[in-house]
Amino acid sequence: MFLQQTFISLGKALPAVIAPAIILDLNLDPAWVGVYFGITAFASVVTNLGCGSLIVRHGALRVSQVALVLLAVGTALLTLGTPLALALSAIICGGGTSASTPASSHLLARCTLPKFYPLVFSIKQTAVPVGLLLAGVFAPQFTEWTDWRTTMLASAVACVLYALLLQPVRRLFDADREPTRSFRMSDFQSTLASVLKTPNLRALSLACLAFNGVQACFTAYFVVYLTTIGYTPVAAGFLFSVAVAVAVPGRIVWGWLGSVRVTPSVLMAGLAFTMTASVMLLAMSGPSWPTLLIGLVACVLGVTALSWHGILLAEAARLAPEHMRGTVTGGVLSFGQVGASAFPLVYSALLNGTGSYGIGFIVCGVPSLLVGVQLLRPRRIARS
Image (cartoon, rainbow, N blue to C red; front, side):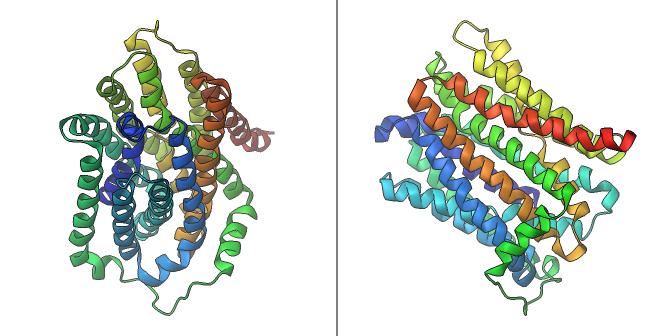
């Protein structure tokens, strides 16, 4: 599951990491990055709401294989460079890959003690920054050596190969599947109801929306923003990779703290406040700022905006009924995908209207501040 998420993360991040080369070659407006990832996230909402039955019917490993193949198809489509191909790529990459996280949660919850959910899920979720790190380190350099289309196709081939490598263990890990389970249109409604009717899950859903929105804007626009204040694409990609690298130990530390030291809601509130402060600082940065200072701000974003996933997903799995972990996780993540869809679109509109990258970062950081306050509220009530 770690490797599955690594390939998914790498493939989904490529359009943002090598965006300068794509923009230059296709003569696109930089705002297309936000539109592309907005469409991707919107497609993910639909899949997250409906993937629960598919995971139960076909098994978590089979769904993981399908996600990898669909990502390969969407990535290859992007290389065509036409408006239709860009739209189809965003839909397939978003809709096809979004079931990968609920599938991995479903599988891991079967073989982990609930007490250690935060730690185990956080270790698995370190695959996301690892994928982003690989993209940030190698994709810009590989693109300079070849071109951006070759980079995208290489990622597509890697996804297909790993999907094939998973096949020998499919029978073992999909032993709990229920072939008689069928997909119904009512699954969308029941998934939403499963998270909205439970106060704790509803709070997690709103947190996922805000956190994922900040992450989406940081991932989509950080490299492009740095190139506008004097950094080369390779230098900007390196800073991005450093920020992502610190997220790997960050996720594990948060998972350990959430398992044995700190209440998950309090821990997530602290992450919310810190990511808000760091994204505001990024908004105020400029050409006169030392590289070390911008790198430090990016690293703080790395251990907050890129490191909350394991603790949040573990809490969702803990609160879910035993046979609905994939469904509930998908429901919570669907709110996250709403954030990942809406925030880049808002950012894109602000960028078009004002020409300022900073305003977009500020606006997209406000919801996480509100979520931090909300996450602390039940604690105050419990004390009183």
